[in-house]
Structure formats: C-alpha cells, structure tokens
Image 1 (cartoon, one colour):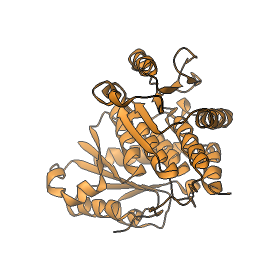
Image 2: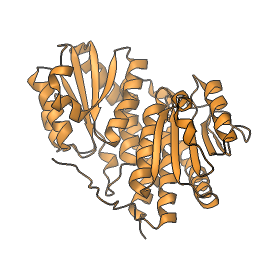
Image 3: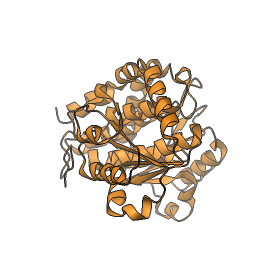
Image 4: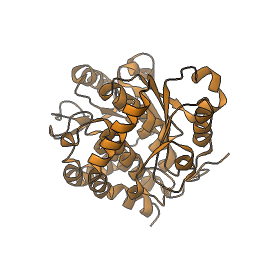
Length: 338
C-alpha cells in the first residue's frame, strides 16, 4: 500500500517515547555535565529542513529551562556566513540531523570546531559524520526510519532535547497518553480530509509551538504535495489572514501561556469561513470545528512530542486522498548531500 512505511512509523511513536524515557536520567546527567564543563554564554541550535524546525522548538526549550540565550539558525547560514555568526568565544553549537550526514550541518559543525567552539550532535545514527565531528553526541537509535520524511525521528529527538533540560517526572506519562491519543488523532485527521475540500493548510503556533507549526507545514508539503504555511499565531492577523477562504484548514497549537489570545484569533478566522482545528487543554466545540482537548497531565512543554502526531496524520490522509505515495515524495531524498 502506498504510504504504508510512513504510516507505520507514525503509529510507532508511543513505543519510541517509552524507549527514550528509559534513558531519561542518563540524558539529563550527561547534558548537565557538559553544560557545567562548557559554561556557554549562548547556544546555536542548527539543522536543515525538519531538523531546522526542530531547532526552533529546542531553542525555545533551552531559553525557558536553561536560561542561556539560544537561537535556531539554518545550518547553511552558519557555514556560508561563519564570520557573521561565530563572533563569541562562549558559543556552543548543537547540530541535529536524522542521518547525521547532512552536508550543511556537517559543514556548520566543522566551522564551529575551526573557531574553537564546543559542539554537540543530535542524530539517530551513532556511526554518522556529525557524531564523529562533535565533542558530544546524543543518539536516538530507536527512531531510525525507512521513509523519506521525518516523523518519529523528529518527535524522538525533540523528546531527548526536553529530557536534556527538564524534569522527566513532568513527562513520564507521555508514552501512555500518546497510545491513548493516536486513534483520536487519526480519526480526526481522516475526518478533516474526507469531509472538506482543503486546498491550503495553515498551522499556527506561539513560543515552542512556532517550530511545531513550521514542521507541520513542511509535512503537508512533503507528504501530500500541497500548499501549506506556518506562522507565529498572532502574526497571522498582520496580513496573512487576507487569504482565508472556505478551502483553507487552519490548525492552531494552543499554548498554556497565550490561550485567550490564540482562541480569540481562531474564532475570528472561523468567522471568515476557514475550517478550523485546535489542539490544547480544555478545548470544546465552541473553540474550533475540530477541537482536540489534551490531558492536563502534560503542560505546554511536555506535550510537544505528542502534538506533532496530529499534523503527521493530516498530511498522511491528505496524501492518501490525492493518491500520492508519501513514502517516496517527488524530488526528495532521505539524506541531502551537496
């Protein structure tokens, strides 16, 4: 069946979460030690494609929990313009790549090393180039994938990054809750695609959810070859809302920090005729056409790996509807080498 590999890799994420959480204390201890040793003034988190959007989420995590200024920067920018970025000897560079062999990320870490900066690799493959190049490495071998697009690899590396900086007690129920929500996410995604003629997909997120919105946008582009966009939630008011119509799906990741503002915007968008979907705590039918209420047991940081699964299912079912094999999207390769 076309898309079968990607579909199975979406479904297996609760098991990946369980496996990663079994290493939680080791991950936290290792990262605490390197932070203490390096004593960085700032952190650059870098990657390409999905890994760059993962970097956006991780930058928000690090800023919140570590209180060390952290920026997400595309790997190509770092290696093409090193003198514009590597100006502080106290910078630590975290490079992430599912394969560990993405050319731009390898080159970005090489540039950082040449400047004498400490480097960290986050990947799914232990015997990869960035692991060999970096001073420190964190491996999510549970999430190696056959498919071209990143699904479980994205969420597992996100979970590892959370465990680097936060207390695992706050996320210990993630595997159990993920198992409970998989069927619900799939049913809602299938219903959204079957019941509506969606031509444009928009994802909104603020804070840590901005990176999730961008990754969701990319999943729809890659898997179903469809028009999609990602925005900081409230920025959608400033121009982009002009394109809202009846063939647009707007999915909002509702944070705990800005709930009222985000729901007010979603209500406005719904009034313009868009199909709306929202995922967050305490949501009901009055908030969106397709509301998904998430358990209060996971706060806005701990539920990040869970929420991205909804977007993956939406992209998958849109690909199925269009007759596209999302296991092998056009023009794309699993590993990008220049």
